[in-house]
Image (cartoon, rainbow over all chains, first blue to last red; front, top):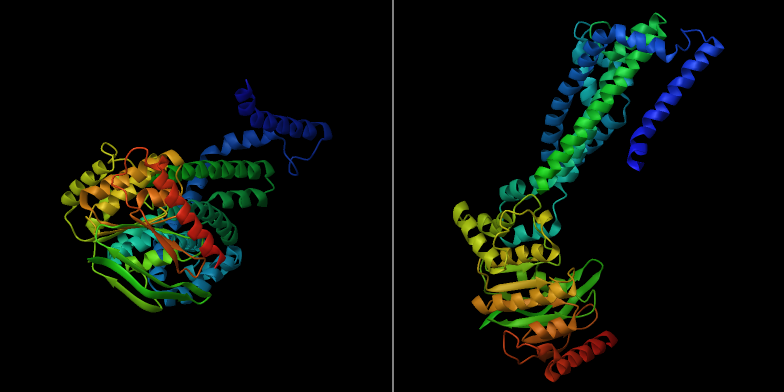
Length: 255
Length: 245
């Protein structure tokens, strides 16, 4: 009974909020371009569904390509940093600069560099910039996270540099890498969406562009429908990443 | 014959002296317990004996070659991503022993510590006592001449630690390595060691020694004999003296 209540509670709250929204719109005669009722959003969602799904896929594919590129660069740099303190001293500040610079501010510049004919390249680059840091910093911490007593054991048995790297440092870093990729993937989506807003171009028809486009035409219901799909995509991606992290950890520690 | 010896060694860290001057000579096949208050430098002395650290002054003499010294830490210190077998085989694999032979010898070592059947288990699937046994198997797998145990049972409950103490003594009887073990537990020290060395408050020096002349493995009921009690009291008195010094 209690379980049932716990399962129903969030759905019930959502239904109540939507109901209140619908009633308020009708009772107060709110202009639909200002705030359309949920029923209008549902209609827009149903009508535009194929377009929205295609747009979601465009955004998602930008984010996934960016995730792969960010992952490769971040891990390669992390290995260099782990092997050489001098390299760490050199790379760290630059990596931090990339982390703290807002993507929106970099977007116009990258669009110029990528050329107006290839906005997708700029979008991927921007998403790489935001996805890079959590993976890099996870990999760096992970490569330094080996149990100090295990390190001593490797000293005791005279392990070579390679044995230490392959049998101790890399495996010790796995949980940190999983976490870094989970956070990085979430940020890659945000990066892709923000970059689309920055680009504002019709060449890459992602979700953000759909929302912008509907906004330009004051089709508020379609804007909200786009947001709904974006939210659903975020929730789905988060669930997949959580599951991937759990499975990875299970594989790593055997349970 | 001496397996390892510390001669008037001292270890200084930037924040001050950690140990010494301290001397300890270890004969082959001897079991020495190192007892002392927290921060007296027991673990530092262990690292010197293991050759993992060099003293600031004094001399360390060691006869065991590479792979002939083994250390068991306070925590099991196992690699979570490796099976019990792969953990126990690690010292052999680092020495370049072929994988199949290393696995076979690891299985033997696991069987010796009573873990036959658990070879494929991961550390997360083992209890604290079982994980400690894997750690012991890893230490024994190379057939060490010098075995260093740094508070190996500190994290275990009393029943498990007593069982492990008996196991260590019967394992010792097989190949008779020299053993040094650090403990805070005076009764455990007297029960396991042929000689208990008591250290003073840090930086540790020798406060005194108590020999324990009783057969190994210990006879049943050894803990309740008058001789056992007398030695526990002697060690406790030295500890109190060393704390006051």
